[in-house]
Length: 229
Image (cartoon, rainbow, N blue to C red; front, side):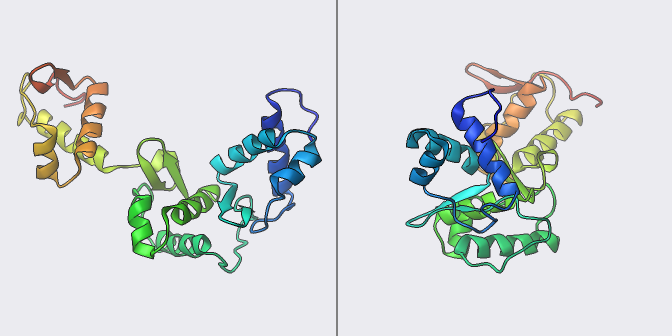
């Protein structure tokens, strides 16, 4: 293991395993040693190993497979694509082709895990593994509280962004004057064909910019014109 003294033991173990994965031990697609084996290897408790492996799972480098253990899904050499041998790899390959063909464009928000699971007839856990695999290749990225997107964080563009942009234009054009009360979440959701949570996130973006504010008993009120309008 690395001789670095910084950080908790589980973090140093995770870094050591990550280095081993980069070196091809175990290779992408291979199974990780069990927790018991890793605990003996590093001379620590299984709980410490479990924390280390959880770090790797969050990073998308390994994924759990029910009844089998944990499989390495990250750090494969560029261009090295094995034939898909599991459901999640098959789904990842199908989505990869849709991205490469342009059907799913950079910045586009992917359907959620539940919708994708229904589309491919698999469990949400299988879809999550496919997403993690694609994330490890930096083909897609996860934005906390927003979902999965094609490309990196800089490309992420959501339906909430679209709703916020439309409201900015309408405020700038005078359709909603300063002091005007905007339609409620339910009304806007029906009007724009999106969910209430999408409208709520759009309002949050406008509130953060100081364009609208929430007033007790009124709702969202236009506070100022968008910058540059």
